[in-house]
Image (tube, rainbow, N blue to C red; front, side, top):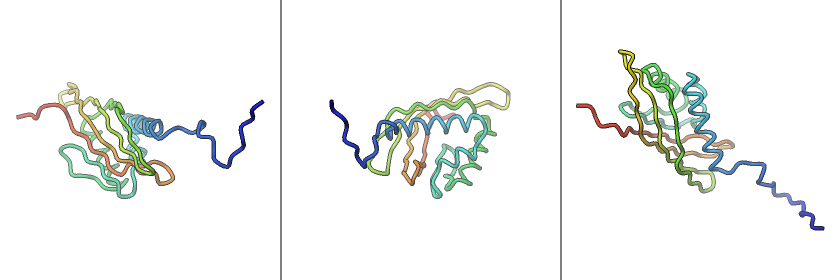
Length: 143
């Protein structure tokens, strides 16, 4: 009977592949944002990580990212959903491309449904952290 040779290399099966890890982290991002835990979203960024949201100056580092996320949340953004379309990785770097939808509650109580695309750059520093996150809407510019 064949018995596998014990190796010093860890069996990769119990560990998630990079694509699955990034997809799971993207959902952690969504859950934390939708529950108003902006500090938990910001904790996914490196110390110099950039968050580049439309119509805002970039935020660099977890504290600035947290402030910008709070500002966006307080502006009525809610029910964020991310769909990771593609993850490419090489060594300790990964790139995630996807689509998003988000509801934006207007001052009059109506909801504007926004949709668009995003790209995130990730770096493995013991754990996977966001180096850069940029997103843009597919909605036409208002006059």
